[in-house]
Length: 280
Image (cartoon, rainbow, N blue to C red):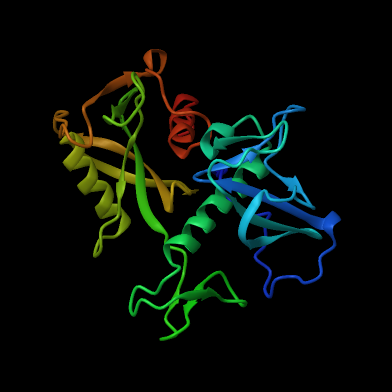
């Protein structure tokens, strides 16, 4: 089966150089306030895209070019904390917009938050401390003093559904909402391939070993900069022993007795649903 990622911006093309003299009718904006975006839910489904021209005094700082879709050019802009949004609009964390706006809007909104965070966190060079500026040929920033080029960070992480007979292993982190369980996940470490990361994370978090790893799919996870690489594995040995740090509870669950699991806008839910449908 082919996994359909939720937060991919495949329809949004990073055309460089940035198109010039785009008429207002062909401009769209994502407005970011803190780590939230402004959206309107009326009519349903709503949108996180605002048309040009923006209301006066709403955006602060320089606009950030995101890309194009067809003949429409997309931008992101900051909204200062405490600034009241236009009537009918409200701020929302991106993940809470799932189902409230079209999927393409959701992906662009997540991308906008990520790119603005990249610009903020790399405004100064990590090597010499001088200011940086955006490149006009690609998504990157260059130091105005030493010419060091910095690209948006991508942090690879594995996420794995583990099967044992007709049951699946689900676990919960202390950071999860009460009652929520999910599959095992963890970040790739320097010097590891992805398969080694799976074996290490599973062993560290729940104390078992796995075998027969199979690739499932991948998902950009812009919270803030992960790329989730999904696997399916089979239990090879050992009893569950949680680490009581990353994981506080774990167990084997049958299809008709699953606990609360993540929402649909996640590769973790896609893995669970594919297993529930007996596709993996």
